Amino acid sequence: MPEVAANATHATLQSWLRTEGEMIEIGDCLAEIETDKAVVELTAEASGTMGRQLVRPGQDVEVGAPIGILIGKGESDVDIDRLLAQPASALHAATHDREANTERTEVSTPSPAAKADVARVFASPLARRLAVQHRLDIGTIAGSGPNGRVVKRDIERTLGGTPAVHAVVAVPDGKADAAATSAVPAFIEIPHSNMRRTIARRLSESKSTVPHFYLNVDCRMDRLLALRAEINAAATRKISINDFIVRAVAVALRDVPEANVGWTETALRRYRHADIAVAVTTETGLITPIVRAAESKTLSAISAEILDLAERARVAKLRPDEFQGGSFSISNLGMFGVAEFSAIINPPQAAILAVGAVQTVPVVDNGAVVSGQVLRCTLSVDHRAIDGALAAAWIAAFKRAVENPLSMLI
Image (cartoon, rainbow, N blue to C red; front, side, top):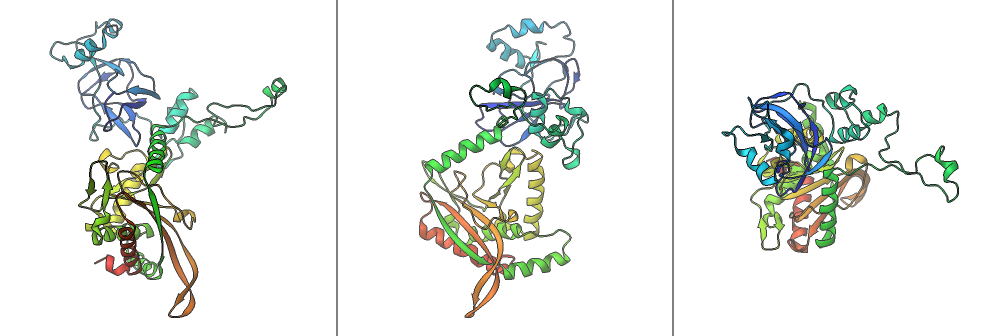
């Protein structure tokens, strides 16, 4: 099992893309490996025959542990059972002794440029896991997701609308026998994905160890909405409100660079660029692809990049460098009608902006009460890295950019 993510100790073998006895060429995709943020392809670093698969799909494996045996060309008489009986140190040495024609345990690292397997099934990690648990042949299931992707609802449909993985029936004492054949399960249990475990761990650590404080700001959106309508009337690709928000955050970080920081136990990190992480919801959890150096990019470039990153995030095709790092995060729930909320900081970042929905409310304009479009945002701040006055200066810069949208396009 390769170390597909920095400092990872375990990873999940999501699916095998080759079968035992099949010929393998260098660069062939052997399997899909699920990390805490994405699914990556495991590629062959040597040619030969797939001798044996040691790990079943869905199994969590320690980094460095053998997952399969690749037999070199001309080594058809290999005794795999004898090989596996060797001490771990001898087996590890065998994987690197290519000139001696010994057996090779495949532990290659994934390559984004690896050749795709045309026979592979296009399915989400959760769908694959449920198919394995219910002993379904996922290759026979019609997908209803993007580009025919098999997703969770397709597995549930195949099971006859019963998505239960481990059903538990709650019944009163003394009535277990009568209820056993008629009771409806009280709940279902769906195993945690690697991503969900990581989200739970990191957010629990953040909320319990980072001293959060919060600043709210109301932004008049009338000018921005008018400019957006004018741009979209002539543009081939529509610009979203979120695209403007990302650009406004980048401008504010450029104007108040002291707020573009992160906290570590030994030093305060001052970031050179506004690398903005934008939260995207996927089937297995939340992921934050990053728009790098957003302060130097046009609104249209930011819009195109966010669209591309979000699409690939939902099908687990992001490279690690596209979602790891970042200097600032944005979480936008406005599209769900949420008026206001507070987000949890993603360390070592020191701030995250929670964006609500644009609402039509009464506002005072030149002494008169009129109808106005208002957006409420909440800035969550790590008080160890950013003081109240600095946070207020940053949120004022953000408000200026939003309320004077032409200024952020120059």
